[in-house]
Amino acid sequence: MVMLLSLGYYADKNISLCVLNLSELSTKMEAILITLALLAILVYKYLTWHHGVFKKLGLDGPKPNIFLGNFPSAITGKQPLFYEADEIYNKYKKTHRAIGVFMTRNPQILILDPQLAQDVLVKNFGKFRGNLAANWIYDRKLDKLAAVSPFFTSDDSWKTKRSDLVTGLTQNKLNAAYPIIKGCAEKLSKYLEKRTEQGNAVIETKNLGFCFTSNVLGEFLWGIETNALAKPDEPNIYLQMQTKWLQFIVNSLDAYFKLLPLPWLRRFAQKRLFSEETNNFFSQLTKDALDLRAKDASSQSRVDFLNHLRQLQEKKGLSHDDMVGHILTTMLNGYETSATVLFHTIFYLAHHPEYQEKLRAEILENIEEDGFVSYQKLSSLPYLDQCFHESIRLITVVSFYARICTEPTELDVGNGHIIPIRVGDVVSVPIFSYHHNPDYFPKPSEYNPDRFNNAAHVDLIKKGIFMPFGCGPRICAGIHLATMEVKACLVEIFKSYRVKCCAKTIPEKRHDSPTFIVGIDGEFWLEYERL
Ligand code: HEM
Image (cartoon, rainbow, N blue to C red; front, side, top):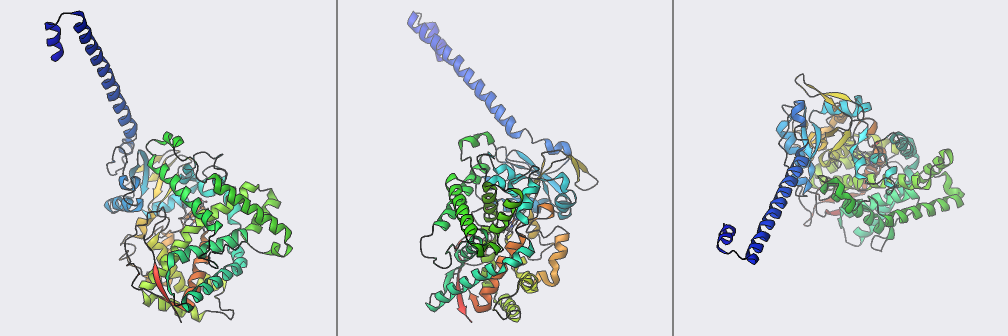
């Protein structure tokens, strides 16, 4: 409007030039606006490209947010993923066997019926061999040590990597390695004795759990004393490196999830899963441990993971990177998970003295002359098993797992409706939700080991309702190691100590851990009374 008036009133060159510039500007503005509009349409199309995919298949599901999909709070870090998944699960569980959801813009089929989950994980495993966690590695050459892990592998090399790992973690091997765990339990006892003798019996039990599993892994993986329990107050390079290593992984995964809508931006964020500094440290540590083993004939008959790797090196020429990779896999999958189950069990048993007394009675009845419960009994004590299973149900440290379809197949999603599944499609199992479904576990937020009376877990595992370690050929590779170390520590504590809540103890509450591992946030201060 102003421009037209100007044109009619002032006829001199300068002004008309100025008007010409304005019109040029407006053309440029128009071009910019059109470009922006086109860009917005393109971005919108890109973000919503897949949104029709489930409709075409006739699969129901909640409407996704354009940018963040169906898990906006999890992507922005406001709420853990399993809670958001649980809200969706509860809405559809009575009416659907499976639904379609979006992790940002990426479609996933969420399995609501445990029997269908069993089909995918076990019966139909051949068609669902891939693990979504393999995508967490951006560059497999750069992250050569992380890439050794079967957990991060979807291709054909998975089978060999898994076999190399699990043959060092069989029940026979762990039975033979049991003296190592007993040695760690003795160190824990000495530490507790010292604390209680000093009148310092209120102990932060999360730290205690981390120190114990760290000690076990140090001795079992490298044959080294980490001093986590012996000298807990002294600076410790091993523990510092372990913490640094885990923090780096958490940062990397944080970037991975935040950039899911725009994955190509990952090249500008933290690309590696394992840092170079910690890779160098753990590689040197492994080399030193191997050199020591080669020099010391007496330690060559020790049954531990390092000797397992030495045998593999001899038999099939395992490279040094493969050896370090397997050690780090065991530490990554087994350190925080096992410690979390351990300290939550102690915490829940302190809150429920009636269950603690029952467990203690069973332990005391089965102690052998050497002051320990034998490895065979450790695996079979029924109430110890119940307490362990109830903690792992309530906590469900690994709350969600996802498979990638590797061969075209079909999925029976109920009501006579069968949908085609293509290579690359992702199917996920919200196991936390199964473990917290009141139809399967009445009053699911309560800690109650009695719900697993008469080995009830066996039937629940068969039905796919209880799968804290996963199921099928990709079941947790460290299930026996985790079970052994957690149970051995529980026996050691409860045979000699009554663990009680005190003024500093936080209440039992909703799981709100800010890390990737499920759990209750905050410190677990508990009082240890010597019996
Ligand atoms: C209480 C402790 C633990 C829990 C609750 C746990 C849970 C799980 C679960 C649920 C899976 C399956 C994930 C999926 O299907 O995608 C898994 C896989 C795995 N776990 Fe564990 N885990 C524990 C301890 C350990 C330990 C001590 C190790 C040591 C080696 C370990 C090594 C692995 C590996 C390598 C895989 C991947 C297996 C494969 O894909 O073939 N875990 N774990």
